[in-house]
Amino acid sequence: MGAIWKICRAILLTVVCLSGAARMPGDTIVLKNGRRILALSVTQTGDKVTYETASGTLTLPSAIVDHVERGGVPSAEGAASASTLSLKPPDGEAATALLSPNQNEIELRVIQNGELDRNYVAQLENEARSGKGLANQNAAMAHHAASQFELLHGDMDLALADARTALNYAPQHPVLLMDVAYLYLRRSEYRQSLEYLERARRVAPEDPEVSKLAGWAYFGLNKLDQAVAEWKHAESLRPDAEVEAALKKAERDKREEEQYKENESSHFTLRYSGASEPGLARDVLHALERHFAAIESEVSYSPPDSIGVILYTQQAFADITQAPNWVGALNDGRIRVPVQGLSNMTPELSRVLKHELTHSFVQQKTRGHAPTWIQEGLAQWMEGKRSDRNAPALLAIYRSDPSLGSRHFAGDWMKLSGVDASAAYAWALANIEFIVQAGGMGDVDRILDRLAAEESDEAAIVAVLRNDYAGLTQDTAEYLRKTYGN
Ligand SMILES: [Zn+2]
Image (tube, rainbow, N blue to C red; front, side, top):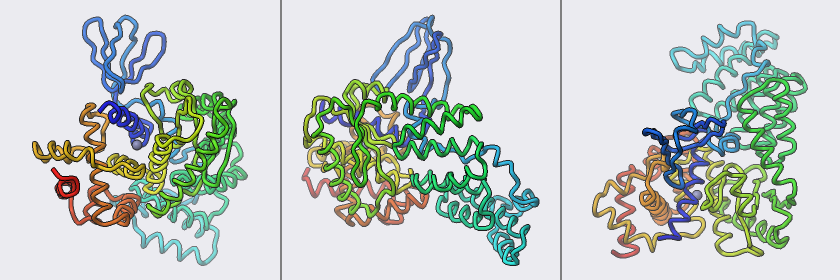
């Protein structure tokens, strides 16, 4: 139990990083000396402030507490996760540059009563065939408005298609260039994004939004020097709290990584402390490339850009991630792995790498729409875990109350107690194992594709398995009984 629990807790934090975006549920305690403490929940009684953290319950004297901020607090990892999760569409100076003199009228006509009028968009596009300047501007404006609408409704593919079409009608407009750059960023296609940002920079050289977005693109590409330079430039043009937080985080990473060496393979950029055994970095890259090929063929997807991996000594890992010291590894956009004392690859390290790498694939393939249970179920399955040892306990839970087999489908595992979290991991693995056994990896692929298309998670399950969550639970229990006995 001890070892399993340790791993589960390690994985639990990873979930938070993946699904928590830049905000986690919880409160912030602000001390009189200005220090801020993030907590899951805070209660004040008499002269004490008690708060829950992932590593337990802690108490502070009220005298040193200035105030408590309730509700979603920016997470420690928020800045990094935001590169894929909490980006806001650009809203800089350029955004006020008019796309068309009929801008307002077109916007009102394109979106009527909460619906997108594609006929009207097509009509303006037809008019643009006449080749007149104003007609082109109107068509660009219509597609820009359509793109914003699709983005708001979560259809990233259509949003990108409209943004790119808009650009055909006004190829030099900075707003449209940034629209496209932003959407590529959201898809983790950093190089593509930078191409459009370079074009935007040529027409709007002093726009802070261009530098802000370019910073995210470089951060995603693991190019910290350039990310820091872009964000510093953005801050000099216009201070922005989000950029400031991102800059702080990137500078902290950069200071640590300055002593690091860098190694590259075809799909990874690896940074590691100069103190690490040189052979280890090479072994890690080999293992990662092997896992990459395996996961790529299993989930029929290939991440477009190089994936950043950082090997830390244990202490540096805790300092940089500000994660509790029981945390095994993290994936907050870059894969961070502590390797203290290791001089060569071990089966355990290889499994951790494959687990974290699976998160990167799932995150990118579903564009951030995979529920926690699919992320963790699939990551465990890929690293080679199976339900044999968990089956008797899961079946006993299920016999006592079948609804306990469905609780892990709810999104937020942060609220679960320790025992429930272990059970959640075990159920998630059992569900994925059942799905793969019954319909092959193809079913998992189809579920991921539907999630990428922004279907709700249960709708994706129903569409592929012809069964809802209750049915999946029942089938999973039946599978456990048949496969592992009772
Ligand atoms: Zn995980």
